[in-house]
Image 1 (cartoon, rainbow, N blue to C red):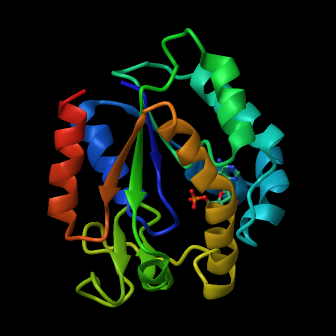
Image 2 (image 1 turned 90 degrees about the horizontal axis):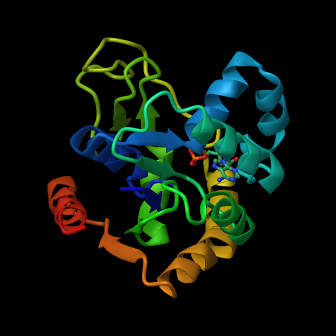
Image 3 (image 1 turned 90 degrees about the vertical axis):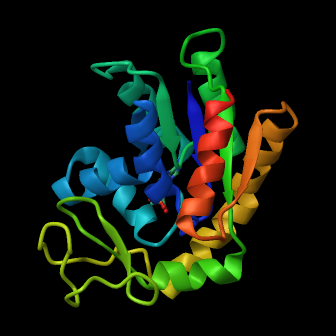
Length: 216
Ligand code: AMP
């Protein structure tokens, strides 16, 4: 099964992607994570992406499309399919991916849209802290670690993403409304979208997500 998981920043894509990846044995491909890794390593791709990413702007489509195509081509194990997280984010990306995968085993089957009102997202994002070592995600308002600034799971110092501040968030939410919501509408017109109310307790959302995926 090939899935796109879509949702505004802070909608829980990261949390549910890990669960979906582990439960359904899919390749989790997060374009945001790939960019962040390349930026921190200072690769040529990272140098191209940094100027956009740190301001909350989208990296240009040509760069992003080439990166995803390359990543998909070089997967060492196809597993049960992929979970693409954070892509496609523009109609041009959706069309490019369609050209790349139409009629192949990599064509998408399903779009999961994690829906949360924008005012709820601001608090989630500005309070978010992540562990760069084990990937655990916390929130200083709603899910604080036992010791301030330290990961419960592995003891590493927590960090805040550079783009998790109010200024960048405004840009990212505007990007989402202007560019990504039309992508969801595009797939909805093809009857591929399952919408999940993601403004609820995690276990309720997870139960709905599993019900959807188990029915496919
Ligand atoms: P995310 O972790 O998904 O919020 O992505 C973080 C940042 O990476 C975004 O704000 C963009 O700068 C960049 N990015 C991730 N995915 C894409 C994409 N599909 N198209 C363009 N830029 C992207």
